[in-house]
Image (tube, rainbow, N blue to C red):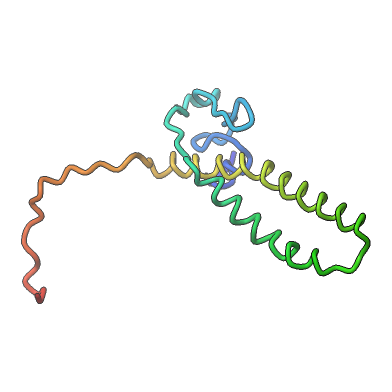
Length: 133
């Protein structure tokens, strides 16, 4: 259905088949895809989605934090604008967080991401002949 992990993640669908739902609750993954059986227990997006959503939110909303204090309006309107701004920020974060989590998880599936393993025995060979010390 969706050809890229980014598009399937934005629609909160499985990264392998593009049809099964990723989440059973707001940010809780299903155990596996109900369509293709992809295992979702490997899900480890950590803080990535929150970082990207928070960064995007500050890019979008930061100008309002500088403009709103210098706007010459009544105090009641200014308080109302602050409440509106903070509500918009909360809605922005809560809306985008599942999408970004889906995208990052689907990219992990596509690239077979896993925890790094260090199995070096300390034998790295000698440097090439053209290296200078």
